[in-house]
Length: 499
View: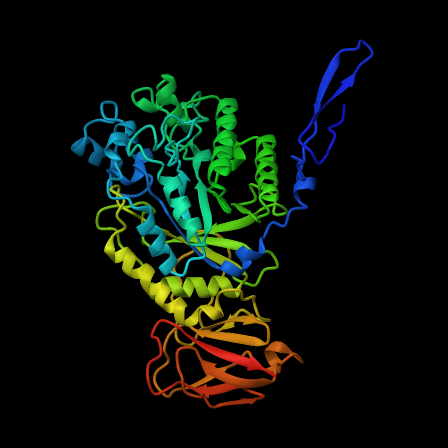
């Protein structure tokens, strides 16, 4: 019998020839678990297109070792690696002190969701959140499916729930990121592939990663694909039901999850949003979900052109690990602002990661960068929020040759410019300071670049600078001089109003 779609959550009884009742559930679900039905959902929510900038944190049991990077949990099981050597010297052999033994050490004793949410708000972020579950089998919420969770073990607090409440109270959208698909071990019967990183934990009969004990097997992903997929979907539903995230971010390896489960997730998420009268977004990497239902994410990368589809870049404040480590090196505020501006000019958004300590404190040097980004956005945010790409994304000598993830660092100069637009205003964001009272030419305002669509400029000003700016527009471009005082060494915004 075909599914009957109705508007009330009722159960009707259809009587067969043997007068035996068959129950058919009528639902008010708008979306069915197939890609054609799901493609009717608007994959890029308006709020997300307007928001542009968000922030989240890699934090959990992975933060306890504070050594090497967020893949410590994997690499500590690889004999000969620096992580293995460090682990043996510090804690003992992994066969004697396993990753699960870090769980009681994750106490989050100084974690304060209100402090985090205030910091994220001051950063200028419009969406914010936390890694719900990383590759390591640890859930930061009170899961009824995964016993390795923050309510039953470790801090014995619903750290994700506390942060979710604080974020929503500050009118920010909520992020939940899921990296858990990589946790599933798929090479148990193939010793030559035990170190293949498609599975996060290497199977090794000498270590807990091969344990058949149901509790340890759950953490280390040593369970059947069917059970893993069932739990994957169930845990997503838990977070959706209990916390209503506005953005769900998927890390890679979701191709390990059967298509039917991925469809069911998307239908559940979209229908839940529909009932709550809200718009939600989820992301994928490298085509692991259809673009008709989700947005592509480029980890530590981005597009080199304006795209029709909206997309996301996730970057971290650090130069190395996504989770906290001792002596973690950091990017400069200018580098992060430049990435944000470049991403927005090409029709994308940036989600920046921070790395709190295991005790729940975000280090002061990371906080300073976050606050400096917020200060820049306080002055220049109108060139970022609620904008759309202009006819060209930018100009200047610095080129990005390819699109994709994990791109090499790009260093911009004061001759590099990125454009955004809003209504009859075009914003030219100069990625550096050319000097005081220096002539600047915006070469994109020419027929060579725009053809017959060169806009007629009515007024030119600089955000954060109160005096008038004299300009000249001719066939060679739009010309002005910088003020006699430094506006911002990192980037400044030229506001160009069109007749």
